Image 1 (cartoon, rainbow, N blue to C red):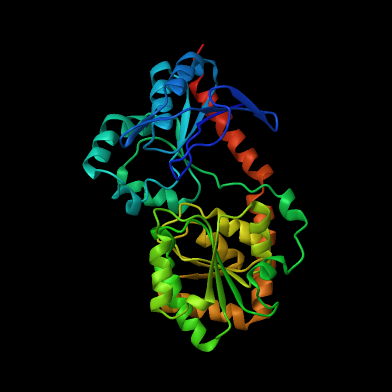
Image 2: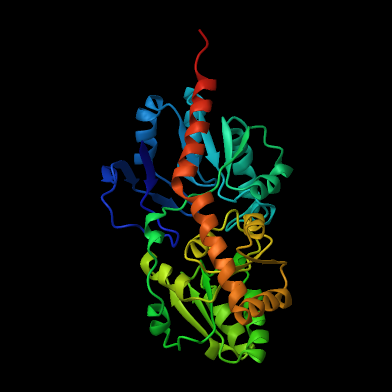
Length: 363
């Protein structure tokens, strides 16, 4: 297996890695190709040259993402030379995100017509991570076969969880103080505009409640969130921790009384699975696409996009410790059974084998 990506970061910076040459990590060959920017357009000549020279040697290609040069170019070249490929949209075909663009929406529609739709409609399969993500993309009428396979979680780091307390100590919180955790990008889609008013309502009945907002700030959106905290008079109940390492994130899940993700759209919800793996009960919106799994497993509470419903669900778990503990235990069991990598790898391998077989020349 070979992984090809670029040295770009979500913040438009660049990774400090050896570019354009293979790096071996856990036995996997990885290429980080240098990326060049020309206004809003980014491209990589090194990536294109490597794909042109090597693509014919692969049995199948799994392409992640849309609306970027590497996935678009790779899918186009695979089409041209007849190598089977599947595309994973990563939620970008959800109607809410489909109707938005960082640049010109007209340019996005043109890009789709010229490149993305031909690539999607000629793919061997489209890989969705939930039935909800698949259903949200039906309006586009994509011809390719859909497959639904969840994201996976590496279980060994969750096998032995850390002792309680270290994250609370970092926050200078008493061990009994009610702790709500939000962990993810600070971005408009995450529903923080619902969570902050919900926190204000919660604080009226639980004055010592604390919300820890963990994750990187996207497009300076955190400034809006902090302003809402001031307007709602809960700035003393909230801390912003920024990006944290996976080890500290696991500690945060373990120490939190409840994990909250009230997103407007979430094609999967990896942080929800991480929280479940740590035995933390969750409160999520019904726009997080694994909400049915959470509901059916009894691993947390699912609410609409409504601050009052959100506050009510959080208060219920903060005040009913026995119910919260039981939900956390069920969530941990579900995360291991449903989302651990061995199960996911088996499903992916089956799909790969079927697509390769279907693409084999007839005798």
